Length: 207
Ligand code: DX5
Ligand code: ZN
Image 1: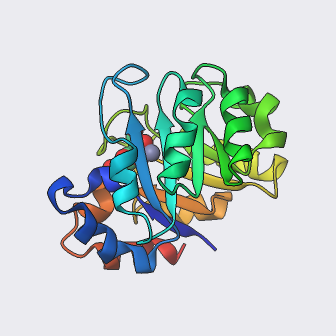
Image 2 (image 1 turned 90 degrees about the horizontal axis):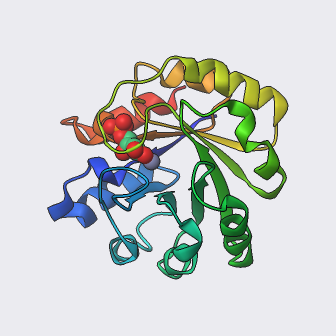
């Protein structure tokens, strides 16, 4: 079964709470993309915005920041249920330890251009592998097809992990990703760019 995590980066920032309340009943998590203008060129949201959605749905915080260890406690206090850090960031192991200390789920994220083996040193200490299917930074980019093979390999090697796929995901590729072994799909523009976000979520969940 595949679950959906709408990327709130694709929502209307002036109506974030309304958009979260609309999608949350049909979604496993609300996916929160945190960018620091350094790890990626964009700046997006901080702990206060995450906190404003606390209680509406479970919160899946994706840190695209250079020094994730500096922010774990802030996002945990804001109500994160999962925090993912990038393998390309500084000292992912330290950040993962800080996440586990907070008794929440930890994820390791990797970019499409990063070798799949880069996550190996961290896999024993995490709950989720966040497979990026675009280079991180922005909503609305196109899906990197190599992701499907990457997900298949990870699923075979790590049968117990949550495998989340993020970037360019929507009704057109949800089924093939679910079949490859993904169990959590992030979608921003596919959901919030649609006149009927719920229909898109239900369609993607069919897997
Ligand atoms: C990209 C972010 C994604 C993005 C997804 O850096 O991590 O979560 O918001 O948006 P779509 O689904 O539009 O690619
Ligand atoms: Zn993301």
